[in-house]
Length: 108
Length: 122
Figure 1 (cartoon, rainbow over the protein chains, first blue to last red):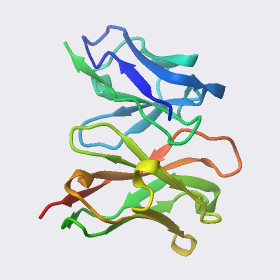
Figure 2: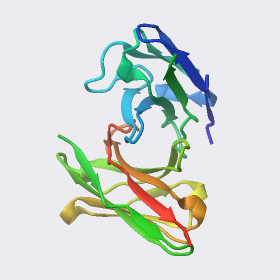
Figure 3: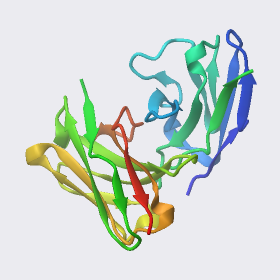
Figure 4: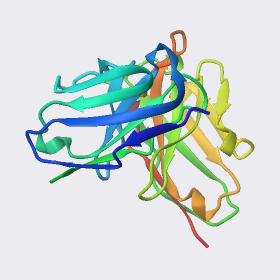
């Protein structure tokens, strides 16, 4: 099973700042089969990024994904108030399709 | 547009079974995998398995093998999750999610149901 480790666990920033979230895999996620999701309180997760760097439909360009192999990054260039949420990475390279434990992005 | 609408909240006793439905609309039901993911209160996301609605093929996470059954009814474009032998640590929100097409490489979950809360308590 591929274990995904996200860091930091909590990130405290202010609107307008830049956020960098990390996701490290225990083994290579070939073909960049990695996604990022955003989850707000009381809501289902929603897809932000798939294929490590492709934005899902309707996702603003302040969200970007990068990385390959075992190290992946989600960057939010200029934080908006609605971006404060929990973010999960997920690999779909192999079964089971594991998720990271999440990074909580909170307002400083 | 794609919609996944799940059945309502359930309260079950330990040892019982629960069946959650996921009604799909806005796309060709038999063309896309449906996955199930659960989230215990205050916890992260846990993948449970997938079903290919076109032929009924399934794949389950090892943790749930023998307790979970995924099915689909193409006539009403609805997928089902049945979980048996419920225990208190099965208390969670259960989500269905639509992944990529059955004929293309694996993909992320582009659409999610709203979730179904299952509470297990004596």
